[in-house]
Image (cartoon, rainbow, N blue to C red; front, side, top):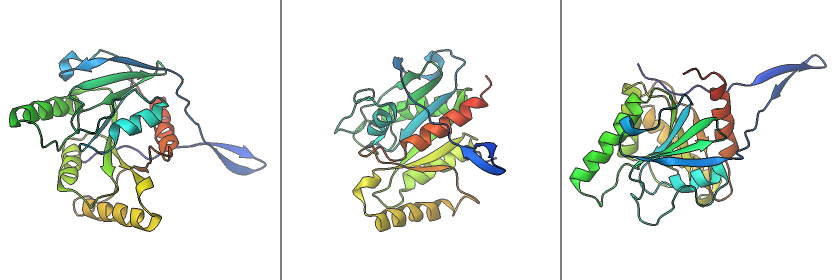
Length: 225
C-alpha cells in the first residue's frame, strides 16, 4: 500500500447563510533542542506527533527549518553538505516534534558512513510510531533526480506518510519554477497514480512556511498516540 499525508482540512462556519472557511495559523513561540541521537532506539520517548524533514544534501533543509521556526540558528547551516549526522529533535510549542534527519545523496563520505546513516534514517522512518509525516525536500532549481524519485518510492512501498516540499523557488522566474516542478510531478506519475500533498517554499522570503505550519496544526488535531 502506498501512503502519503492527507490534504489540508478546513473548519466551516455559516455567515449570513454562506459557508466561510476559517484558516488556523500556527504561531511558533517556543522551540527547544532536545538532543541528537544515533539511532531510533535512543530517541526520546514522547507521546507527541513528529514531523521529519529530509532531503538530498544541500537542498536547503536547515534554512527552511530556521525559516519555519523564526530562528536563525536552530538548525546549523553549512556550505559543506552532510553536516547533519544524527536524528536531531526539537520540541515546538511543547506540543509537537520537529526532527531534522541527515540528508541523502552525500558523496564525500565513506561507504561505511553512508551505510550507517542510511540505516539510521530508515530505522527512524520505519519504526517511529508517532511520525505523522516525512517532509521530503526537493530542490526546485534542478531537473528531477533519480535519488529523490527512488527515496519517495521507497517511502511509498514502506507505507511512510510524506509530503513534498519544493525549496529555493526564489531563485527562479515563475515560468521556469512551474516548469521544473511540473517535470518532477510528471516523473513521479510514472510510478504513482496520484500525487501527494506538496508545498512550494522559499527560505529567503518565507514563502510556503505558513502553509506547512497550517498543515501540521490540522494533522495534530487528530493525533492519537
